[in-house]
Image (cartoon, rainbow, N blue to C red; front, side, top):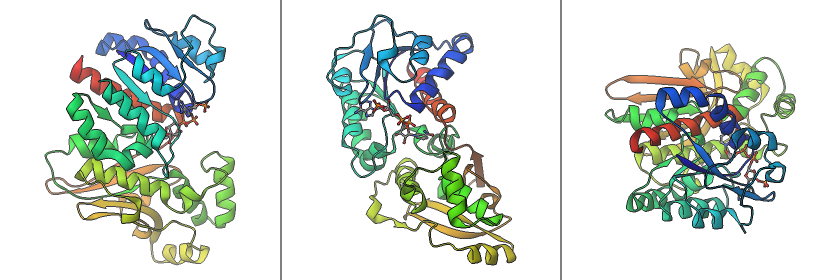
Length: 336
Ligand SMILES: NC(=O)c1ccc[n+]([C@@H]2O[C@H](COP(=O)([O-])OP(=O)(O)OC[C@H]3O[C@@H](n4cnc5c(N)ncnc54)[C@H](OP(=O)(O)O)[C@@H]3O)[C@@H](O)[C@H]2O)c1
């Protein structure tokens, strides 16, 4: 399988590390022999070789094509040109998420589909904003789109809702889909102020220097758009959702909930009626109340199976790389 990696940052390198570490078992057990024919960055160049680039040499280059010392074509104006003019079976789009304006990443996705390459992405922007359009273009072109990495990283919540539960009716799915806010709420419950918990989350690399997207609920809201589309085929916009973050929750609120045997969690909900993000007080008997730190979780309420919950890591280079690997293997099983 010939793969183009558009974006060579943490997640792209996380995938390459897995392909390197698991090369033998992937070949022996699944007959999977991936070739990375191209990697592209925004500011540090592009590499292409039709027979495949060396994965160890790519890993040694640490995200910088200039540090890749082996033979490769480098003369491309942009990732878009690369996608349009070179052959590959799959394009993996792992450039930064821009929720307000995902035009560049969406153009990468559209170009992959238009040139009949399967598409895998970890990028929330194109899926949250242009799901229907991308899916219908993929259907006409006869290619697959997979996006497991966009919500809960390698914890397979998209595959669970879209594929494993496809014979059930999902009445509602409720999730903790933002690790930063769950970490902050967990630390506040053990006595830290909001400010100290946020500072700690930033020091640990969970929260960005500007934490607005996490703490105001916008990252979770983008994931709500993706889940609405994936589980209910419903394309919504951020303005259709009711979104409240955790900045209004005080230490006193947390203490009051604790005294009543409850816990605050930032809950992303989706149902056929729509979606929302809001802090909720959950009884300790709710599986989501037991999810602490930066861990993510989702609970599906279904007709046949009642409640099913999935708990796991929701971020990290290897964890997100694993979601890309799972998508690659699904495409490989289906089509190769
Ligand atoms: N990190 C996680 O835990 C995680 C979890 C789930 C989903 N995701 C999503 O996965 C994606 C990648 O995340 P990351 O952590 O790997 O980001 P990152 O470390 O910032 O890497 C982004 C990469 O994309 C490249 N890039 C930027 N603009 C580009 C363009 N126009 N054309 C080609 N390449 C371009 C960057 O190159 P330059 O450095 O040269 O600009 C860099 O190589 C994001 O959409 C993120 O939201 C990440």
